[in-house]
View 1 (cartoon, rainbow, N blue to C red):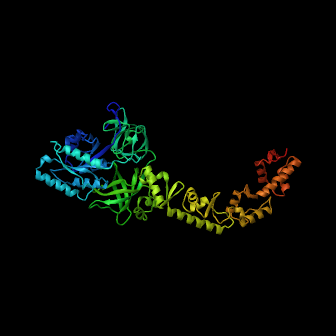
View 2 (view 1 turned 30 degrees about the vertical axis):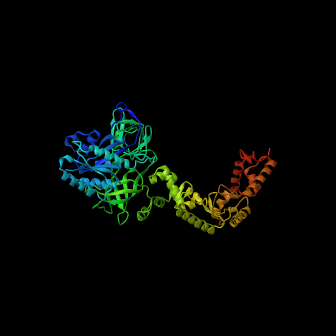
View 3 (view 1 turned 90 degrees about the vertical axis):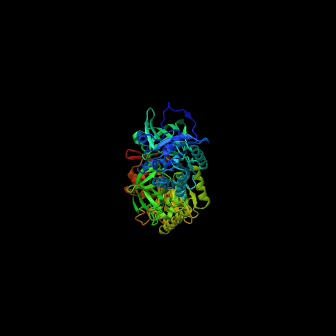
Length: 614
């Protein structure tokens, strides 16, 4: 595929179904695609010379129903299994090819297991090279295929006999494929597009072009996108599908995207193209494990895991004794969501060993607790793992569309599994636990410091391992807890610190020596009580000294009276007026200046604008 302004015509985007081939080497996959489409999917001279598919090939045709089909032809040789996996990783239907001359072969079996691990359930079987065998051999070959497909995800797939060289049965292949695709569900539009790049090249006059099978949503011309694990910003200059320029790439379609902002060398097979902010860049995921027959996994180690069109080395560890769940760590960030299917291979033994289904892309669960959490349905699982789910994060954490994520939320709320708390979705039991633990700590604080209004919000949130905003939202409708002025108190507790017995004793102590008050801490009063009284305006702190508000009001009256009589005052005059010492008078005079009662002129103070003295 290429994207050039001159070589293609503009076309309206229409739905397409992408179908991958599968099957053993030399069973006629490429020849069948050539017969169906008129296009030879073998692109390289080496492939044509050897008659052996090495890398992915692509071709298109329109079926009798009008359905456009994009074929991804994959290599069948065991040495090129990596390329085969790159071709089938993003498709939902398969054209499985078995040659009547050889019947079921080792790569037929491995390809079938891979398709099962990827969740491919729709497709058909083409029994090729029918003219090269007699009727009895052909019948035995069909029985052999049926026997191997029994019990698999393709057990009900129709089998069509054909021969690509003579054309025998090719129309039957077309009509059967048309019927299979009509019965298969359409590729969903979740509003969250993701394209796994299976080919990248530089086109003359166009720049960087990537190809792949579009999934999850629509990407249109001029869309801003992110490319690869580095999330390189780019813009879509042009879109092509089936050799036609189109305005947008639809789910299920084979497409080529011309990207502006990234260079050819910055992109490779296995990279992704997504919209900014829609996907979790996952490095560690928890998965459900499906073993292949005779497969084997150690408790922990290295594997090659195939995601979309890419191969990634990973570290993994099994999370339970039965090997049902595992934790997988990638070397790069990948846009993954629950439900994604991955294939695991043992590179050393060159064999497929297991399939992984992603369950959690941002796991917060300790390994020993993970199996119990992962066994839960999606909603309870995410609530148990994350505790607090932001509404804006639900689509990317669930893998659902925005609309379905909203319906998912409402279902959890209506079933009393969760409750909306501010901007978060929280398990009902989690909210109850938070309120119970907050209540316990607040009541304990009241007992330990009866003179204080309550516990400080930030300190309480830290103790409960929550964000202050989360705790505030959780306590907003709590019937027995009150949040005021940054404090949390029990509803039975006095609303202000000044109403407490300790507060009254402190105020009496300070007013006993109003202009040279003792330090509350030295008198045995808690700093929390002092801060609460400052917030309420009962006390005023001046350079580390705490005066009562009534004492400073008395200072104000005395100083204004003296200014009316004398016109000016010095610091020494104020000291004598109050009968105090310089330690207390200097901060008092500073307060008088700041509040406008006095105004400094050299070493003197003259009436300020708030004094009322002319």
